[in-house]
Figure 1 (tube, rainbow, N blue to C red):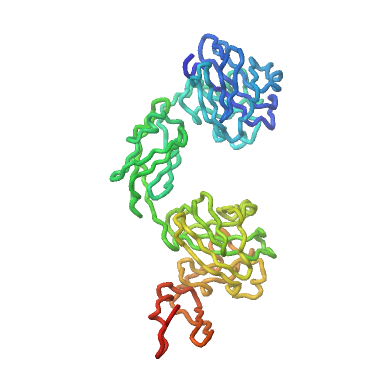
Figure 2: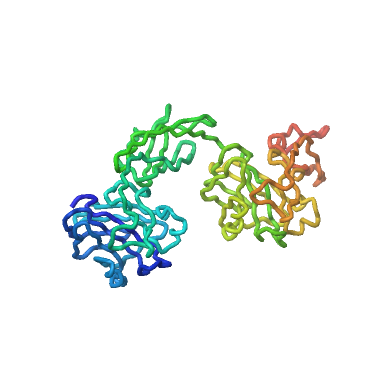
Length: 473
């Protein structure tokens, strides 16, 4: 018995609602040979689960339906059936399936996905996935589709979509991401021959050396290079010699630009601290971030400090000149209709009277920082709840209260959209001393009208008292 003598030919992973077939999961095997093949002692791996075949034979150019013991009787009317103990694990979204001979040799292997239905309607359940061409054993998604049979599938019969479907196309890169300053992630359109996938000579950036090639799956790898990519410099990754299982070879150049993240590239742009009574928005707290740059910025691994609490971000990216709504996990679905929303665990602490907010990059660098107050509404009525405070000018990153005010949107805020009060608001005024107190015979206290640059704030040369010496700041 050789590889692909028997192939996985049909998968019913999501059996409900039935279109006419028994409402159970099944897998159909097909014997591609013109002689019978015994499957005694064979194994089927479904993800991490391994199921053992008892004695059985697939007739020449015929089918064998695999299912649970409880569903065997119902499938017998469709053809030969072999029931397996603990037959489960055909998850609706996808899984890895591996067929092993009695000697442990791989006979067939696929990793199906709900994208293989190629039909939004049919991936909701009741339809099987069918292999288009059983003699094409090197394609994945391009050789599978939802059944066209009115019953939802064709167990034990020729597939409803069967036709010649030779793979003569090279694989494509369908996902390409900058993971870090020296790491890239690539995903291919189909399963890749592992000898080519894991050959470091197939990935090249001029002037840099591939340090580590990380295997994720037969369709995905991560590349870690010796040197960090140069900030804002266009670069090319040459991907060559990558072969699919049919021998079609990819040769392509991927262009990318790495951008270091600097302070104020992303700003805190809107705060809903007191969500009740709602003026029309979901009745939850939120913070809106704004990407001020003309390129996407990943916030994976970033942190948000709300007072003394520190919250971590999961994987997400803010598109160029766009917004990201931060909220609780329970509120994320409600805000998704307003734009890109990221649910954050333990998202609380936006006290109505005010708090400090600090946005930190994955390296712990401060990207933006403010300390808001209920005086920033600049409206007694709106400070009572249901209205957000919005940044007037996102390019003005050095003002505090003078660059914020209550939203004028009828809904009480503008999550995921341009702020209702957005306008140019350049800060050309010097800070003022708003509080000056004598605390003791040799101790003074000063409070300024806005955040002060720390180098000037803590410079003892900037505070003079005639005939006296500054001892401590």
